[in-house]
Length: 119
Image 1: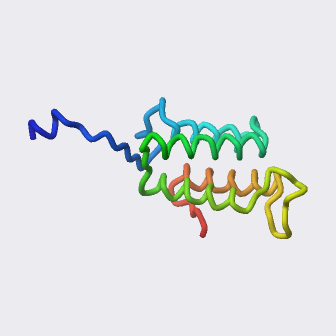
Image 2: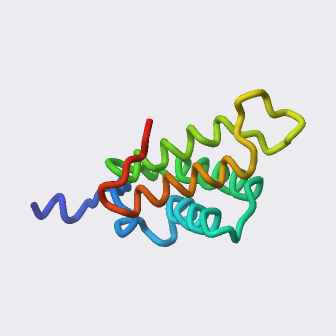
C-alpha cells in the first residue's frame, strides 16, 4: 500500500462530471456541452471546440469510462453526422438546429437519472 501511495497513477479515468479535473480537456468538453445546449454557443463553434478538446484529452492521456464515456461517445457519433460547412452536407446529415436538438436531448438524458442516451 505504501508503494502504491508513493507512485499514484498518471492515468486519469473519470466516470462522472463530478470526478473530472476542472483543468482537464474533458472538463472543457463538459463546458462546451453546457454552452451549446443552453444556446450560448453556436453549432460550428461547438463542433470545432469539441474536436479540439477531444484531441487535447487524448494527448493528455485523459480517459472517461462508464456513463461519461457513453455520453462522449454519443456526442462523437452526432458530430460524425454533422458538417460545419453547409455546402459539404450530404443528405441525412444533421444541420445546426438538428445537432443542437440531438446534443441537448443527449445531455439532458445524461444529467437526469433514468434518461436514455439512445443508440
